[in-house]
Amino acid sequence: MKKNPFLISGYISPDYFCDRENETETVTEAVRNIRHLTIFSPRRIGKTGLIKHVFHIAKQQKYFIPVYTDILATSTLREFTECFGKSVLTTLAKNEPALRKIVKSLSSIRPKISIDPISGEPSVGFTVSNEREAAASLEIVFRYLQEQKSHFALAIDEFQQIAAYPEKHVEAVLRTHIQNTTNVSMIFSGSRKHILTGIFSTPDRPFYNSTQVMEIGKIPLDVYKAFILEKFTGNGLKIEESATDYLLELTSAHTFYVQYICNRLFSEQGKTDREAVDRMLIKIITENEAVYASYINLLTPLQFRILRAIALNNGIQNPTSSEFISSYGLGAASSVSLAVKSLTDKEFITTIDSKYVLNDLFFNSWLKYKGSYV
Ligand SMILES: Nc1ncnc2c1ncn2[C@@H]1O[C@H](COP(=O)(O)OP(=O)(O)OP(=O)(O)O)[C@@H](O)[C@H]1O
Ligand SMILES: [Mg+2]
Image (tube, rainbow, N blue to C red):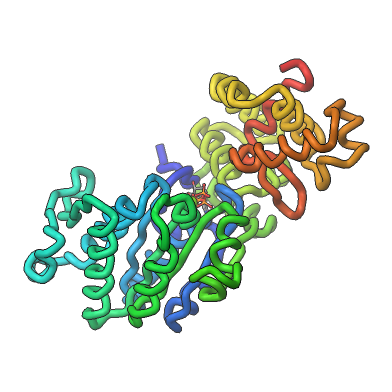
């Protein structure tokens, strides 16, 4: 069987990647001109994919040295330093002499070499035991970067995490290092718009106005349609054009959901028409039922009723409007407002095109599928 052309995680190569030509150009241009950049979008639209795509091309063209760090799993400056430091040093340790130089020059942070079990490549990390050591190690890593002749693009994905670190002055510490390191362009990326806006657009915060801001949206319908048709037919599978339109409409062309349904349809190796798309969506949401039940357990009865109302209503601009509240019997506007805030904080809902919608489109479809009988 042919390799599935629809990725649902990670990045392989431009062959598996649809469009983003303008966005790729914008990011590359910012980096090459040593401007820092903040990329945000709702979850699963393709921020990480875009960064990986730009970095893939940069590696081939040797425009700059890319370093990617995902800090989603970090909760302190100490963990950030270990995670970020490991990405930087592992990239710099690209050959034996470079590795030896790092071990010698950075002996004060006690670099540890290990072999990555998956890639078989050496990786270089270090441990940090307290906040003071974190600040000192971070300074050493940035100073070492500054000593290099190359130009670096440092991407920090899920950057909003830093706002929740308990240490004081995290933003100021990072900002100072970045300002003092003149051969790096930073790419900050994340999905929590209000947290990122707080970091980058609040006048009295260290990162105020320090980056170019880029919001990424959906891939244009006609471009995504052509990509899907080409991947199916190019691999000898039949797909009706109307089925592609229908799939893009059902998913509102939200990247992950398009990729996921296409991946599953492709793996069935059958003919794809509208019925096949419907069947597949029901199959997926039925498989996920246990997960949705556990989501519901995390909600108060009112939060759940609001979530279901938003799903049934296909999103809502103003959830405290009397029309919405009375149509779905939600009670007092003040309680609805509090519940909406809580649902947003828990990332069950988000705003896209100034409408509140569910973050998980398959959960949304399941709630609609079940109607009011959940
Ligand atoms: N341009 C693209 N063409 C094809 N697939 C893509 C494209 N961009 C992203 N994808 C795929 O869509 C899925 C979601 O993308 P990605 O993880 O980049 O989103 P994200 O915005 O970083 O999400 P999150 O906010 O959850 O981190 C992934 O499986 C990825 O492989
Ligand atoms: Mg991501």
